[in-house]
Image (cartoon, rainbow, N blue to C red; front, side, top):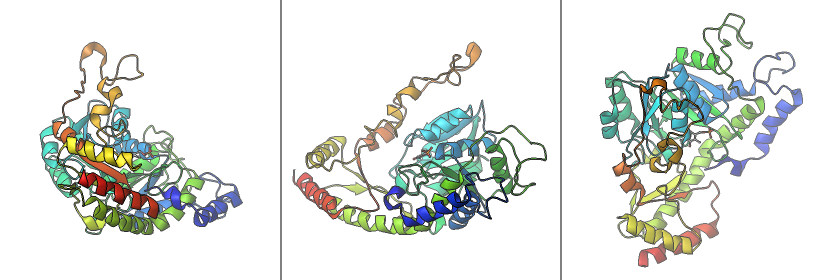
Length: 400
Ligand SMILES: *Cc1c(COP(=O)(O)O)cnc(C)c1O
């Protein structure tokens, strides 16, 4: 994972171009900027890398989700289905546009279970957000097929899987649009930042206008607005320095993935000594970004026992069932419907027309799976010493 590990001269050179002109902003200042449009260049390169027609840079992966949902026309009264194992940002964005998140189980891909998705679709479902968690593919082709049967758009939250593919086709290009994050822990980082890719020109135009107060950049290339605004927008503009860093990081993405893959195969070999262990199911192992090594033990008891030994040797793995950021039963503020709005909206609509309740136990299959899954994050540069320690600890765990 994180791209900050390899922040270096290439990033500094791109930043220097921006500092040279002093134009820190992506729009206007056309004379002073001396032909330098870093955010625009990052968008063009990112779209081309992914094989998408258009890309829209924004301030974060969370705002990328919000801008995409808004451009898809999602709002109050709508339901959006996503998976119960994801980062909180996915459903925060759904609530942020006034819609209601509905959660599915995950299967052994650790992503959306298509069979459960089918069950959760209602006459209010207006969008499906499939997440490619922990660097690897959701069953996105099955999900897109189910969604198409109901004429529901699909958004791919690809925040954790930039560069991931299925048979060569990039994640983020299967649904109507795909969102990415460049925050501190992501494979490409720009400090903070996000991107949305799509082949749908009208959708992209809506995103471009919405993210900049409704200004139209299509009828007025290089400038903003001047033609009247089609709808009310907001401000989620990316800065030139972020665009500059993104260009340098993107150029390194494939080599980062290759380095992680090497480490991952060594880790998997080491993990294989545990009796009964199974690895996370990958839709296409070739297209995995190898940012995590995830493995399942036979029972939660066995899992706890193994991780206790690993922790005793200073190399404990992550159990996302205990982690408060990524798994539904641990989202206490969502379960409680905690919101700053005095009316209780969107959990409680004024007049009591609707009360939305999140029951802790609605995802039993995911809970069972999470309780016996262990995860190692894979850095781009894995110290041989740490790998050796993990290998030794796993041997001990296998014996005990
Ligand atoms: C990181 C992340 C986001 C949010 O990205 P930010 O840039 O931190 O706002 C959204 N979804 C998932 C799955 C993430 O991991």
